[in-house]
Image 1 (tube, one colour):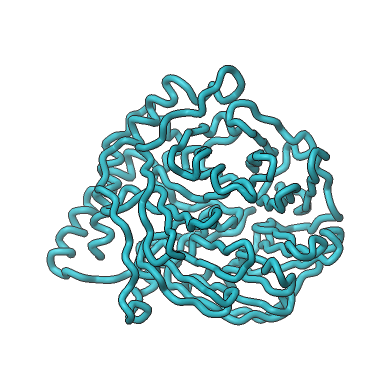
Image 2 (tube, rainbow, N blue to C red):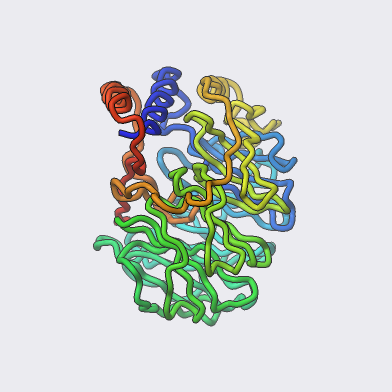
Length: 452
């Protein structure tokens, strides 16, 4: 049992101690940052999706305000896809539609998508793409340009759940989509469209495993060059194709779950991060062909905004933080915010945002200010840090929505029963930690199951 697990277990017990029967965390989940995005071309306006709503920043992450799940239109364990457009509007995909907001107080519903499960969103700045994977319906693609309404594109694909979609920056008519067949064993499926989504052709490349696929990036200068992440029982692989998805090579392997991925606007530099600090943060300076480990730090999400690399991690572990930044291309990560730093709800005078005020925020604030260890900056790994990485341990956890997987994490802890189970776990961890002072393994994770 690794000492890392011991510190996590004590952190969880500390957090559970702050819970009450009327806790704001009615979904039974621990506070965790999952995805960062920004308004295209504006590194000051940031959005951070967490397990308890979405945080807004208008000053590059120096300060944050909260918008609760109820105002956004969802609850429970749903991890909504989010995307922002150049006009500053944030879009949030729901299990029964799509909602957007500019100020976090007033919200607009896309009536065209009412009743649809929105499984992914992708922004190209001025417009936005949506994938819907509504049960008992074909999986569809939808397109919105400017002030136009969403329009459904093509005939859809029967029997599928679309995990991720992206359009090529250099050739908007070319799209890539990944998904899984509903009600069947997990198997990788990759589609490509060369006519703006009207027709989707399934590709059948040879892949290293049968794990689920998630789009990571399309090279902004080459629509044939794409990176995808593959999750399997062997860990996580970042796969590179230079022929529009016909064939792939493995560019990077991690034994843990590859939660984070981002690139520079020109695609020249690429980063990938793992939820296991021993895997840590990797960087490529040749458009994703090869990677070098640059830091050992736990990564739950990554985002490149202006000249900064933004990261999120676990604030309830020793040295943990909610949001960090790197100004040296990932060699060091400096914590810049904890959940306790949230200034409060977005101030609203009317509108749906008022749902987040008063009692709702007081309970949330009490939970988020549970004491944790002081944050500390991560250090670059030693020269030999790429060797001797930990065992895979249990099969990797599903990619968080930060990797836009269209799935939720199974087995989230759910309150008092979990606390009761955790107490003997802590005791066991303590005994084993004293007996074996250093044991390196990936933390326990759960497997992905396709929707349906």
